Length: 99
Image (tube, rainbow, N blue to C red; front, side):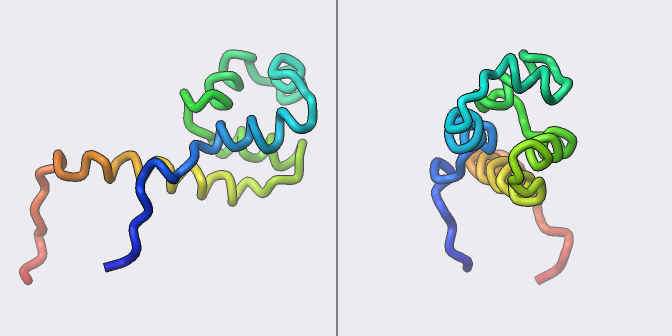
């Protein structure tokens, strides 16, 4: 069995983008939303971990800051899977493949 990281070790990409990219560059959420052509509410929800990172938004960050969209989307997938694993026992699905 592979090494499993505790779900709390996975960081929402929005949290990471806020603390490692947006804040260090000194840009406001309002100014960045205008630059991206998105609503302030949508960007704020992402940066506060209340919304998932979309492929379109990942490309906007890549174009603006040089952070690879692929990397950010892998972060989102890892975060989503870690959260789903927390409730894996609730998914009462048995194997269809005979052992």
